[in-house]
Image (cartoon, rainbow, N blue to C red; front, side):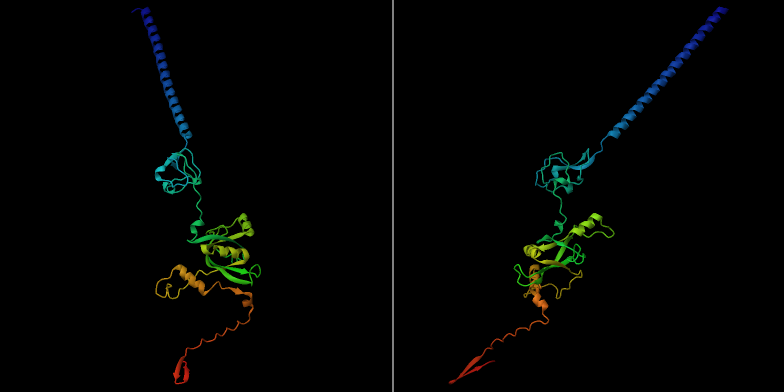
Length: 313
């Protein structure tokens, strides 16, 4: 092989080496670009997923009307369901049992969440009124309310002082309503927890006016209302010790148990309002009891001839 041929072969090999290097470089660059593109695409997809997750609206399980609800008709279980809501309704329900059977005040469209505003608010005071009683309020102060020691749940006697005049012949004091329960005092149905201090607004409100709510029998409402309007009232607090009942349950002469109304009537007959007038209060000594003439004794007539003799046994 001559020298020219060797030079040509060396030049060809050099060109091939350069071309091979260029091919390897291009291949590496293409591979790197594909990897970077795939990595960038993966990053973009992950960012999109994170953004979609962050923008996703949370849902709230709430009781929803799945059928129209008519006003003043009880809610049936078939008309409501627990469904996810994209928003959180105000004062919504999460328990079907708390909705079924209740009566809405207005019509409710299908698809609307059931909230407290569709129902009348439960009056806590109405729930503690005894049967055959009504709640009657009266304005009180420290003197009327036994030095402000009256509390919800206490038993009190409602006293009234009537001044002479205006249809009242003599000034007198009497028990207007005996042994009545205090349902609420001020705005509380139960007493405040120990250690809970009142705010300035509450203290100012207490200075202005206070009320006590009493459980009044339905038959005595008008009488108590009349006494409140014409007389001066006082509350007499009763003790909390249980009262001893002599002889056990009250019974009639035939040995049958007496009803609550009969027992109350018997107690009222024993102490009829405990009325005291100024004249009776001003007496130093009680007036002498009137001596009642003894009824005539029966007699028997005995006739002996012309003589009539009357004999008393």
